Length: 218
Image 1 (spheres, rainbow, N blue to C red):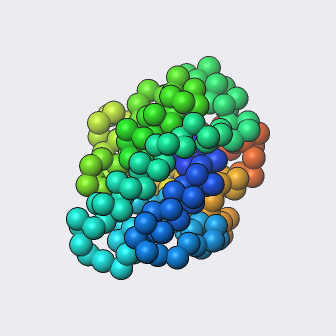
Image 2 (spheres, helix red, strand yellow):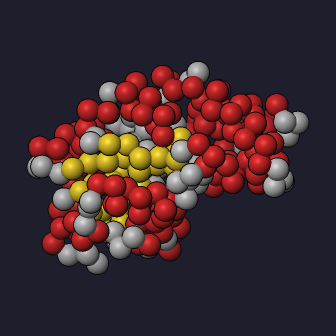
């Protein structure tokens, strides 16, 4: 079985760091700060469209400048991001069972790799897939299609674990089993509407959900 993991809100609790960096970037571009609840919908999708929305612009150069500013702020605080409790035991159990595990995130790939190294999670993953320069592969359905092609994975033997409807929709678009986790930044109803085959509240429930998905996708 092949397991694709989202990163922010699924493996690591990065919301405080991301929110702070977003608001500091907004301030640098003369925009007012937003609350956690207001920023929550922007955790998950590609950062380029997010800042295009914040700045209300189609100016790619301006958006790129904001993204560079944001990423520089994030780089300084990556070491402060914790792993969700219970997640690493799931990763270990899946590895022992012979599953191949990959990270599939809209986060900039070099930053995702650095974060996984800092948290020590990198040892569980064969490869990390994320967005590239200019926002390439920032759209999650495209990212998953790229990952499946590069790794030669069969959709029938692959499932996606994530915390937002973007993850569920991307999984469905690529004919993957989709498992939504409730400890992240999405909402359960949005996960269901996005096409989650199963929802789990805690990492302890995740292994059972994965085993059940191997038997029946429902």
